[in-house]
Length: 393
Image 1 (cartoon, rainbow, N blue to C red):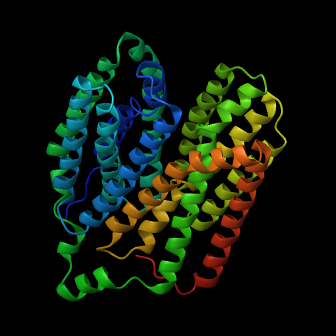
Image 2 (image 1 turned 120 degrees about the vertical axis):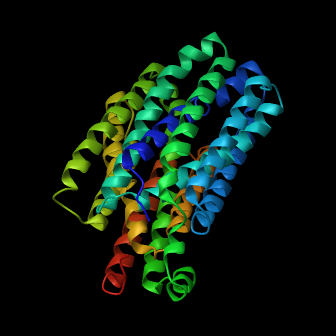
């Protein structure tokens, strides 16, 4: 089977990321300020959007191992195009909320298939592949979120029109450059290997895999506090919202710098689990910093620590999952990477809001620190107990 070119896969990931970045930053503002929807209902809409992403991720990953991935991602792009076209004409209530579910399905589907197709890239180092994909996706987020405010002022329809244009380019790339990826990996196996690939994942591998999946859900549950509750906390402390926004500019810049460093290091150093644990420790320490944060400097330090941890651990986890998953199951397990991550994003704001309402922000940060410390311990223990028994593929 001919391998897919990384440059075209990265281009698709970039275009998809920019297009989707026109949706999530404005959802709450548009629904609340323009359509007069309550914050509770907005929370429900966002929850179902994330749930749709979970479903799309899992189904897309499972189908990747059975059908032609090039065809599958074309269907996903067409689904995204359909959602944006409908949103351009029907962005009132409740159409906007309903169409966000379709948009979430296609977002999860496409994200998973891009990462699953990364397992077919002509590269010996899967970590480098996933790091580059993570890098270009973050570049897309930076560009998309920086443009959304300006375009939104001109009219929300223009955002959807730009997204449609970007996804048409993505579809053109998928139609002309992804066809060489051919059928799924299982079609290259003989019947015995195929049955083994479908049915048998070594137990030690499964233990490590699901430890990583649970870790991803917890990481993203806590990470979402930065996206949702931290802005309120900082403004309550008298810190302007503009300075909160600057933290995300810092985050985007540091992610790009870290990805360049990691891509360079991947040529000389390869130890996925050490990189993951290193990153998880930094994410944990970032929440320790938040426990004591009462002025802007603490939040800057916490964001730096969080970003170092995020950029180090998050793109390395799908690379390790790829190596732990047998041929014929790689798409399914990349789907689970995105599904568990999306689940964390879905429940994060809800859990954070409940803890803050019942206790305090400080208690939330303490819970996050404890949960992330447990994640580090579980990852270390699961690896030490199984490292001599696992099979790398």
